[in-house]
Length: 195
Image (cartoon, rainbow, N blue to C red; front, side):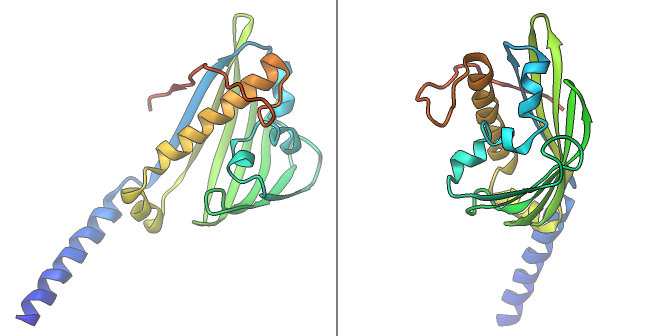
């Protein structure tokens, strides 16, 4: 009886492990919205981590998050180390590439809660007198990330955070308000991009 139970349990574990391993190895999360401002007005908030903290949704998730900066104040080589609660985690951001008023590419090296390397892109595309701001993140899933993803919709969670950040940025750029002090939240809904 015990042998049958152990055999059945072993088969279940094996099947479940194979299922986890077979899940997609890459992920992409992207959100965007139109901001009623020119690319040149938005860009400084994207190319500087200190300016980025003014609209980052993660500052609100953990107001006690610790940050430190190194390298140039903005542009390629600027880095930010952060350490927060379990919703924010711990890691480092480094700006890899900049195209003025168009693109900022960032390397995110996470240490906690799950280690991994992801690439973040901020893109600005003129739309009439306004600008479409797109925020994306791509990366690879290791086995542990795939396992966690079965129980937690990480892509939705990150996407919701991106949407909040975009609303914060709109609030600052369009109305010159600090989203941390203002009780009003922009009603614009960033659209979800299909892969």
